[in-house]
Amino acid sequence: MAWNSFATPLIGKAVRAASRLAHGGGSAFPGKIVERIDPQFLARTLQQLPLGVVLVSGTNGKTTTTRMVASMLESLGLKVFTNPTGSNFTRGVVSSLLAEVSLGGKLDADIAVLELDEAYAVHFVKQVQPDYCLLLNVMRDQLDRFGEIDNTARLLSKAAEATTGTVVLNREDPRIARLADVAHTEDGVEVRYFGLDESLRSFFPSDDDMRTTVDTASSADTASSESAESSANIEIDDAAVIAKTGENAEKSEDAAIAEQLQADVTLLAVGDHRASFGIDGETYETGVRLEGVYNLYNAAAALAVVRAVVADAQAMFLPFEENVTDELLRQVGISQRMIDFAHSTTQSMIDAAAEVTPAFGRGEVIDVNGSPVELLLVKNPMGFRLSLASFTPEGCDTMIAINDEYADGRDMSWLWDVDFSSLRGTGVGMVSGVRAWDMALRLEYDQVPVNSVNTELEEAVSTFVNANPGTPKHIYCTYTAMLKTRAALGKITEVADAGVGK
Image (tube, rainbow, N blue to C red; front, side, top):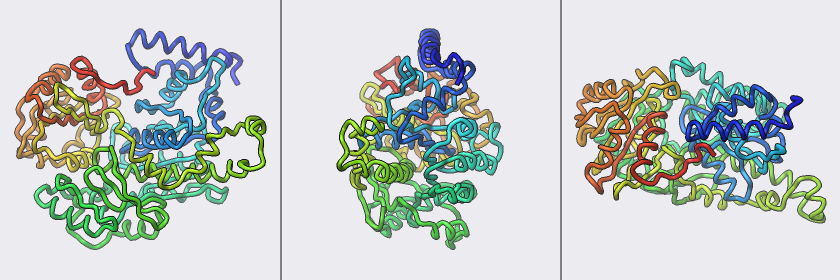
């Protein structure tokens, strides 16, 4: 422990307050300072948590899934620390901690649920061994940072290898499923999977599968027939578009291997704000507040890791339930809410999942003068394809904002791997961002009409959202473009605090 560690919270809070005054919002700068003066602060603070740390990483869905897990655990009664803004570097986690710890360094929480960038997860696990690790997928993303996706998988393997309790893996992603091999099962580490019903696998092609385009013309018929085969018999929304994975109907070797793995939670069917999950041989149907078919699969991932936490809580706390005084519980650091949490049922977990709302910028809807404006984060081919597949353009105005700052990835060549033909009928009302003209050119090659191009993002957002009052609007945007879009909308209408700077 650093000699000056007693002063770390005070110093960090002072730097954070000064940073907020200077920058007007959240910043990872306080975390950078604290990492420099007290390298053990992160590990020392998180070690206080009786239920440990959940690490969430992967290419797509980290922020939303982290929000799901944290929200579900809170709904089930726990006090949860999380990094809610997507500030997913270690210094971002430290900055978030500074907002929550007392001056004495006490963190009032039972468990931490942390989103970590694929590369920074490696740095994190060198300081903190997670009790739970949820790994979502591996896709081509920020090629200038990660290189090819096999390298991204190697980065994520370090997180799986460092986990001390339960590793939860995506059964349908072969690169993720193979990470079971590095988990220390011989030391008691458990491996669990979340997966898809066979009828839904064409919705979620792996990076290797994306060799054909999204076929909007046949999507409704195909979706309806596939959904009818699912055990829950929930019909797919007619607006959904299936990303087909090739003409060969035979199962791939990866799919055959996946079927041999028993999923703890299986997404069986999806519909308009509805989902059906298979758990322990039973089917659970529920309404959901999340947008997009991909977020329903993230919900299956979140359910799997929450089930793992509940199982451990049952083993840890239920033996203390009888013939133990409240005083003894306090002495050993066990609260009544932990015991209550250990009694959580599968149905209560499903109910908690049903109440989760989208993370900021990930299907978030902001009202502007009577027009619902939906922000849709896109940052790689698969994410953009699934967003286009989930949100029908008919009856809506569409805007695309593309930046190439560090947090977005500087290499925008991946835009050429996205099929935009579903936008031909309606066109795109506005294209903006640093790479607006590159995006406009890409749309021209897919014969998508573009009404206006404006590289000044704030001006473009104002023009777009104020046109055609009452018409729903979709804004597809990269990460930094999404942050700037929210800021621009905040000058026009009320925008909920996303937790930035807290």
